[in-house]
Amino acid sequence: MASAISFEGVTRQFGTVRAVDSLDLEIAEGEFFALLGPSGSGKTTSLRLVAGFERPSAGRVRIFGQDAGATPPYRRPVNTVFQDYALFPHLNVRDNVAFGLRVAGKPRPERYRAAEAALEMVKLPGYADRKPSELSGGQRQRVALARALVNQPKVLLLDEPLGALDLKLREQMQEELKSLQRSLGITFVFVTHDQGEALSMADRVAVFNEGRIQQVGTPVEVYDSPATPFVADFVGSSNVLPSSIVARLTGHRHPASLRPERIRLAEAGLAATVTGASFLGAATRLFVEAEGARMSVLLPKGALVPDTGSEVRLDWDADALHVMTGAQDG
Ligand code: ATP
Image 1 (cartoon, rainbow, N blue to C red):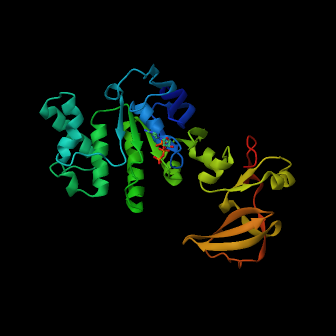
Image 2 (cartoon, rainbow, N blue to C red; image 1 turned 180 degrees about the vertical axis):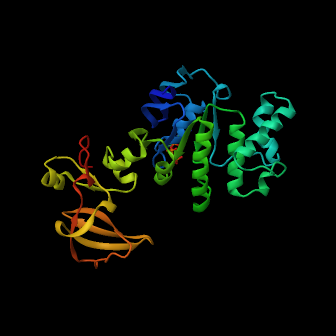
Image 3 (cartoon, rainbow, N blue to C red; image 1 turned 45 degrees about the vertical axis):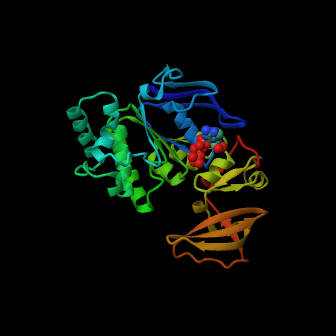
């Protein structure tokens, strides 16, 4: 698959802060790619480097193989959907969506036709005459999307586009964005700090921490085989067993990740003390401590929840324990 975006040793420094630190990454044409990480980890800066709103302090960004260094934002084949949507309050929906085409000097009938088609794409026909203030948050989000799509970008950059929506609407928009991306076949690069969102939508995910990528992989790879304790904890808040326990169980002197839903309470296994429990609705999270390591166990609905302070034994299938052979105890 041809490369849409590539970062080659890219660093972006602000004073003493390395927002992005020696980044190497390839995003293929047609991928739905998520940049996932906590606040301040460098995701937005990476996106802005592709859009051209930031320049690398070192290294190179290529877009479809070409060094983007000297190309201004408006001449790059990319469009950005911002978290706050950045709609013009005094323009109606049609003119907001058609704005980019107006700047490009397209005649009115053509830009309005294109705007209608884009509004159709985001399932918002019939709203063209409204002002942004007369729309719900979800509808504004769709207008922002239509405004980016009307320019027919080859790459769409989305910076936490669902951040302002409530959970139900978020889930609906996740589905819609995914199917829109599939039908358009263009590359989507999506910034989020929400691991559930990244796992459910993306073809591949890059997990960021402190300006660096910790792991790149499919959602299944990142979830089932985290490369580092940071990824194990950030993606799905896994248990990280210290190398002392792992060495005794497996012989490997490395920490290991063990998902809470893979652990069961059993007659025999790792001895642990229950330190608390929290009811989650569909399941109960049990907090335990084993040889100084704090862990959590997801108990299915209806399972007996042992009292705080009681002694339990933890068991799991052999393939549930993922030894992080490249990592040391944190
Ligand atoms: P969030 O999810 O909070 O948006 P992020 O992962 O997108 O976080 P960035 O916005 O890329 O993170 O920021 C990375 C680091 O660079 C942060 O420490 C931030 O304070 C710093 N930074 C970003 N932009 C600037 C700037 N223009 N000037 C100075 N520092 C900046």
